[in-house]
Length: 228
Image (cartoon, rainbow, N blue to C red; front, side):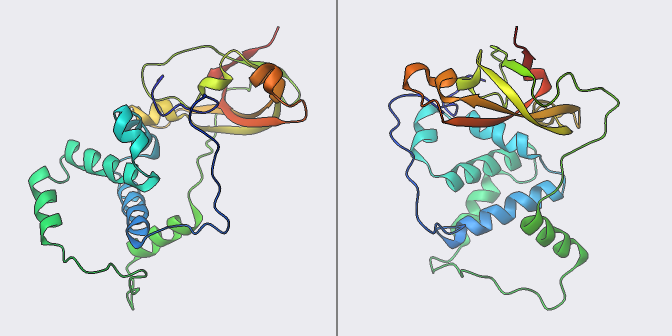
């Protein structure tokens, strides 16, 4: 999707501002939001690509004026209502019932957590693997010159706009992973080979790109073609 979210390499957005010793969360509610997301995914409500697709469908103004976890909040309010897990009225009632006091930074862990709680905690701190077996042979190998296809999917995509039509070199073959476009549209797990592709600064940015700079982008095989 050619949406407002695909702003990498575009002019007018200023420099990337980095924060020294940045904490994982800037407020307790952000940590809770992360926990809600993991819980929903462990429970089978949605996948990460569905979450991303929902955020990508935000309008330009709310997308550009909300923080990272505010976008997550929007996504899960939308997903949970659309999937019938909660209603908008239930959500409004719960918000209205919450006390105005300060949220505890670290909620107390239960003395005897359930197996489900242990599973959620493990995934929060360790993540989950997305590599999957496939009988399909890879089209590319390390060292191959490839071109990112100049395509414009109407839905979710993991192909950044600044790479389209650009030539790079396969640096790593990650094996086959769940293709995110299939997960985002509810088609389930469709394995596709995934590669780390190195693009040089001049290739991406022309004369403005430093020759010693490079960007490494993980791209699915369906996004690539041989560079001839």
